[in-house]
Image: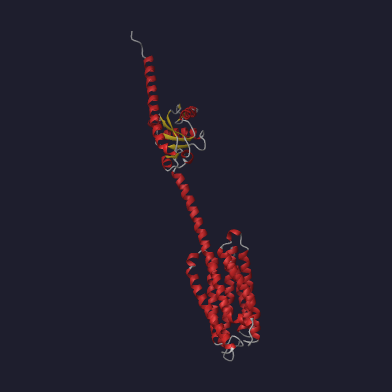
Length: 428
């Protein structure tokens, strides 16, 4: 087979291979558009691959007829070849425009509308200059090498200059592929120019090899670039998913914490204790639990209403919390019962300290203009030596609290009886 026929056959197979591969890539990118609805850069890349495939499709007639070195003319039966090459130039320039638009949008959140307004007339002008200056299809490829090298080099530089957090496998793969495109087309420029001047000369050389196998070279680099682009959008999606997960986790944690807080007093609730919330320090050490109960809440509620009783609860909790250590935890156990968990504290000292705190609460009226009152609180405390013993200590503290309540009420009744007897007149 003559060298010219063999070279043109290899070139044709290369273009068809490239066209088939890029058509499949265009389909893949179209299928991924739903994944990237809010990513304009990926939409631009989808358009770039479609234009690139279209450019190769319209070039096939010129390659198939073995007329890529024929003079471009609409006379002498060359109209279809000239039209094919003209469309190829237009589509190839559109490919470069969309590719660069996507890179700019990804790297710098570039505004696409002004960019497209300026680039559209530029594409038309460069197409006219190319077709008017080129003698044949190989000359056209030489002219296209200039913007291709410029766009590929600039795009690779933009990806290379990304800040460290954005230097991912996808960006580095796309950067490498674009750099390879720039180098390849920089070599195509002298090769196409030389072969166009002396079509398919008989001697070998790197120019002839590149001219024959450029389709295969572009196919390999294009697939590598597509992999990088797909990795970029997948990495971008993964970042969004992780950010959403962190936000969801944070929201869930806030809601969980809110579910552990008593809305009236601001103390932790019994659910928080059951789930072990706030007990990390206590469970890792010894300490004391104290159960507290307001003795006079029910009479206050009955006499002045629940709003007055709520105000009394808030006073007690405020006084306790202002005197606690950061490791001490206060839980609202029931209606008027509270549990204190105090790591590394002794029971006797705890009861004494709580009496001091509660005794320091200044008398306040539970209703506007009412008589100032001081809350009476029954206290029971028990020590624990390990986290496993906390529940038993809570039960024991509860029993001691009720014992204290009975003793206090007994003393009150005894004192009331003695007071009544003292006020009763003696029998004569």
